[in-house]
Length: 392
Image (cartoon, rainbow, N blue to C red):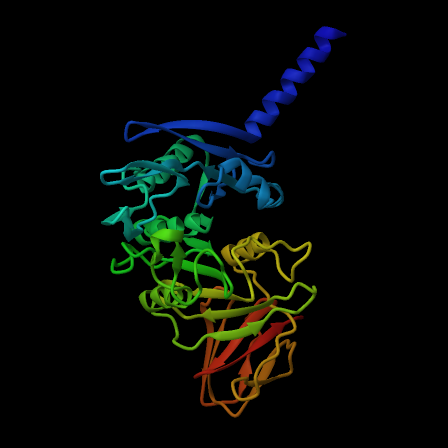
């Protein structure tokens, strides 16, 4: 009996390690670690999407993996999830010494520190973890995954929180030719990156709270206490516009409001910039009164993890939208089956949730939609827009 129990225990341990494993990769002369989670539904016969999840400043990969409940999503959808670990970062103060700052990604951020100590002025630049080749490490990790698993090459995603979000932006800028989409929560394009031209069009979701106490919404500023306040990059809305402009998306967004389902003091708004180059699009979830948090669905109107996955898969559906009368198109019937009428406009484009134009009509207010599959679409004419549900 004891032998049988031991065999069962070892078998369960083997299954667990096959699903979630702490792995080590030597890169740039350093041993780097990452959590690799492979759902039990993975089959080498079916290509699997891959999602990299990047933790924030001072955090640990294991904590971020658990806090975001990403395991549940991976199990449901059959995705492989990777949570890499950032290296420790020490600030070197000239003439004084080294001060630990916690784990940090080399996200392309530099700040100039000015202060006086015992009457002596100090002025020096601090680049966050400049000796850590995180960009190379993350791409090397992806290459390792490609050797071991059958990956869906059109579904390589990055998501991050805070400094991890800034690192996600850097990965999109430098490796957009490989990465399909990113989601950045409470993080921005770093100030060493904002003048660079991205490698390729990338779908981008930015989520940011207007009351963020760590990185200010309006100026992307952080406070280093007695060392002053410093901007680390483009502010939240400027980060959105950086990607909108590069992707050549429409200048006017589709605006929607999430239903207020919880008494959380927050109001979630969605701004979708569609019709970008190579079918790219940019979305911005503005969290009114939101702070430096990863909000979950149990006590909040939306769950960040769920919205991010919906964005990656093109299935975001903000329900109960209150369209402003001056910007909303009058589309009827809605839901519709074979035809719709668009009142007051004869030049209309219909877009899917990924921002790709699927139908265009000119010179008529009656539009044949019989070729469209069931689902939700955006009907747009100039700056006016409305949702359309096709249901048969």
